[in-house]
Length: 299
Image (cartoon, rainbow, N blue to C red; front, side, top):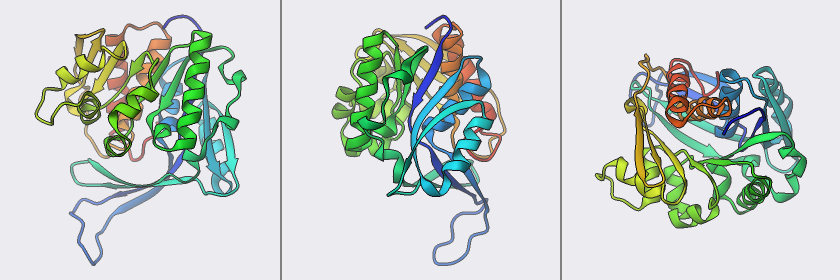
């Protein structure tokens, strides 16, 4: 992936309600927490991190509700992203409640709202004009309408010779959809960016299995697989073999929300500037290390 050109992200914009609670949740009573309402969404977060860490133009196609469309559009523009937000008159913008414990790990409560109502009618071939890469948020594949849109975008990109990457997004949603169904839907993508749990699930390997085996297996289906491993960094597999391991950047973690999205944005921005996979993964690790030091999933 070299040369000038824009990054087009097709994905989700949601409103994040992040609750950081240093003490364990106390059932049936109050738990003191620091709570913030912030713009989020895996696709939008990745786009914002790509715009922050790279020099290429970054575009985003997503669907939002009427009630917060202007707020989300302004946040994206301020982050350096060119948004094309389809306004949904029936459903509100998706909302995610992120419960973040003392260890900075998060648990999500997800109401996808308008985000998964993207449909083929929202697609325009002109979105790919001048694009050098298409990135699809995995959340799109978990609802019929948005999955159809994602496959339309993927086919259009391949017809134009534009490479495609996919972030599987959620092990829980992947299990519900079915790993094989997901892999069939993303056939033709050049880059897959799962975390460890998603990689094992997609490869059909049991929990104790080394993630390297899963990465190798997946790279026989998708040419480049980059598995994010949190504090263990990232593992890169290409065409059936491990080609690199990249260490994580040290960081004092506050909130891990959006760390994977930050990695994706940093990785894609570096690739657009001509970095090879290991260099791009290091850029992704730098972005992820910065992301965990702040509340929320955006730069």
